[in-house]
Picture (cartoon, rainbow, N blue to C red):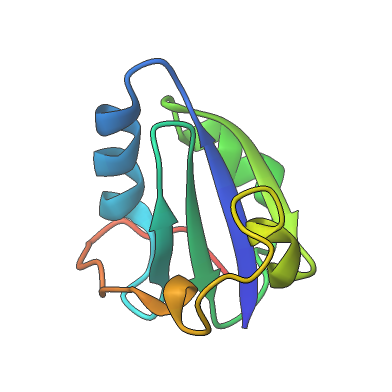
Length: 97
């Protein structure tokens, strides 16, 4: 699995709605905040720049190499399964992994 953080624009709720519409059914949303949305894909995105160009409400796409670093700024000892909150997003127009 490959983790990506989507850095959201000013209208973060609209950005999240847009991403939920285009991510594949197999992707899992790991975390959402007003600044970013972390998504786990089964395969790496083939062309992240092309995907970014299609997303009007997303500023950047960041590939996450080490998920332990995601929680270093929040807590020195994050809960073991805190990043596992996920749900399946249903869509018709998907990003290509």
